[in-house]
Amino acid sequence: MSKKPLKLFYAAGPGDVVRTFAFWKDSQSDPFEVAETYSGQFFSLVRDLQAQAKVVSSNSRKDHDHTENLSVSNQPKMKISGGRLGYFLSHIAYGFFLLGQIIRFRPHAAIISEGSTFWLILVPLSWFGIKIVPSLHCVLYREGEDRRLIKRITSLGDRFFFRHVAHHALCVSLRIKNQFIRMGGKASHASVFFPSYKTKMFKDFPAPPTNKDPFRLMYAGRVESDKGIFQLLAAVELLTRNYTQSVTLDVCGSGSAFAALKRASERHNLTDRVFLHGHCDRTKMTTLMENSHTLVVPTTSKFVEGFNKAVAEGILAGRPVIATNTCPAVDVVEDAVLVIQPDSAQSIARAVKSLITVPHLYEAKRNASDRLAPLFTRPRYSWKSHLLIVLFNLNKSFTHPFFTKTQNQTSILSKA
Image 1: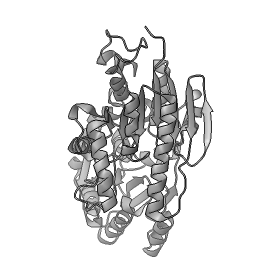
Image 2: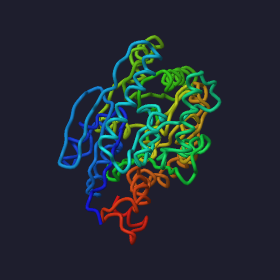
Image 3: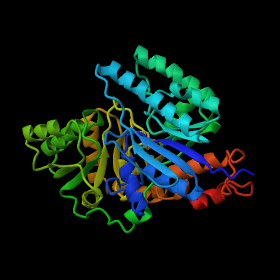
Image 4: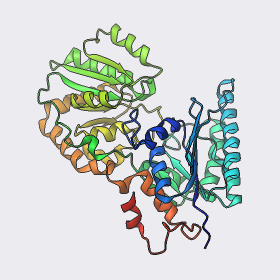
């Protein structure tokens, strides 16, 4: 029997994998992230399997680190001017860069985060016997969208790839899995994972404040117009103008619309109701969440989303969540969420008012949060565990003792 170790390649998307790797080597989670990072989960998987691996991200901070069996690097995409055409060319160029890296490394399997490049570019990997595992963190298309010509062309390439090349897709939501199947992928070749959090992070998390005046809303995420932040601001204004109950909003995050949001808050005289905290580390995020009554995820219909971790974090914190139906997370945790229509400040305001004035509704959503929280803390629902199952199902190709015929899915998950 060959003694060669399992070899894995991971194209990790835009995250700073070198920074996460430095913390992981010291047995720490990345303090800049609330959820367990996918790269951190991958590092642990490589250690568990005693595998050899190469990890590449497109993060703009170029850097590199390595251990004896694990190479980790940030390799930014080329910046090509020219608007959409420049982006298109940069995406293609990065695809050929990844193609070269993977072929030279010759892994048994290559895990590729969506958004790394066009899927069609990676087809030649299958000619070398390399199994390609797409890691899908965003919906493949917006339902009912009128797609441009170039999008329709790339969609044809995606369909070919999913039908004939992709070995198994890891999907962060049921909505993504269903789209993968509609685009030609087999249902048996896709599985759904959820964002993962350490149990201790939310253990003994305090109940929401009993004093609901003011009723504290929290927004956590990128401050972008298509994330619905201006509809949320308008909802606070509506509630302030038309409702005697005081409502405040804590905005935790930064983004291209941050300055515009600040100006809008000042223009509408909401600076004593809306507090813009900018980017928050884990400690500050936890403090704001402890003081909140509910989290709001007001994603607009224009935004292409995968799951939205703020939904999971609200559930883990035992807070009811208000979210639009644009967010795929609501498909599996609807019992703990007030699902509203997107693009509507009035819908947000009505939902907030319902949580304030209907006590049994607020408590019902809280109770559902307790029941659904294990989806985000139990290892068997994690990205790492689902990837382990994919690799286990390839055990005839791999000779490492971890993949023995006597092992089953349960034993794999117990190690995750």
